[in-house]
Length: 292
Image (cartoon, rainbow, N blue to C red; front, side, top):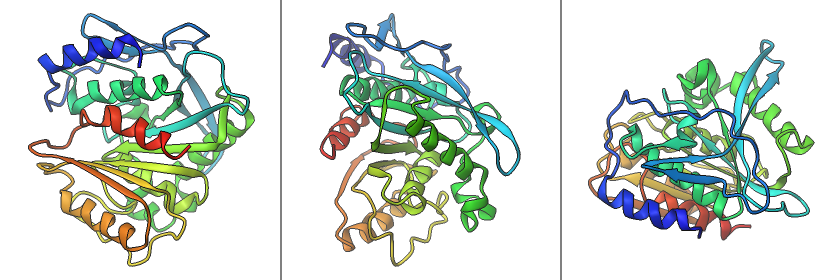
């Protein structure tokens, strides 16, 4: 682990991020790519920032438009087949830029989210953070009633197809399309579950943070009796005091996966609400690394 993490640990212990909405997340501009010997992430004062590039992706259906995705690469030389790659899906109403630059006072645990990105890069994973529509200020289609039952017509499905095609084509740099992982919080956690439901065989492991099954939403949650037989191994992270997505909805998903023999790891934190948890900084890279 690089020295920046020692500094972050000391700093964060003194000032954990509150769960207060409406604070500017401090987005960074195109940070470029990283080369051998260059650290992808830096801590200046109390701001942690990770270098990345921002791409506009053409999506032809259901209407022609462009969508935005941010991509960060580890420092050093890519493996022969490219970097194993983590898709991280944002929660509702906050731009994916919060994954790339944050201070401890930013909302929804954004500092720990950026710290998780830094740890993933440090562990040799590329990180891809797609934006939802309208500058990242909305939410994913996965559990919107119109699209939850007609996913093949959903705008976000066509975005995912374009992203996966871009990975295969090398559009976003040297990424290994055979070693894909997904994680996300809140709406992004439901979108993470969608990867198991709608893109079978594409993702090696998932991390569902403060969310549940792909078509659930908040306290309204019905987990199907039968989940995909090839559902990837899944890490669940959840605050026990989460009032937005009650932990019982995650437990229902967890129980069904365990019953089907899917590998599951669950980490909960007492007293924490709907926010990115500090434990994610170590749990995501560890869980994904175990499934390389």
